Length: 97
Image 1: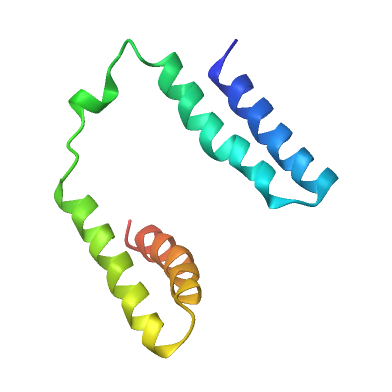
Image 2: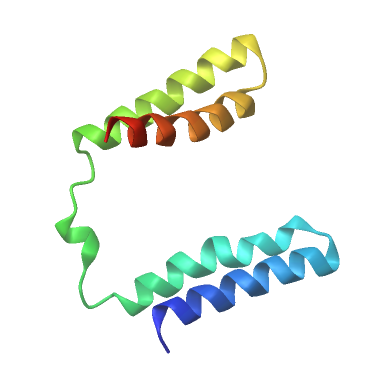
């Protein structure tokens, strides 16, 4: 079975069960199932051994998330800050590219 098919089936199943039973617990299925399935399929390539875990971009993103969370914890709900960061950051990167 192709990777896209597995991801599509897991995503559709999780969202369908969530809508059908009106319970968000079923979103755990695609959240954990998709990475586990893809890791199992690609286990021969051993992607993690070739990746840099602590490169500059990763540390910058982690720092931005921590900073926004702490800042919005004092001002408003931290989830609002993360939502704004998730919307503004990709738009800013797309405009600079």
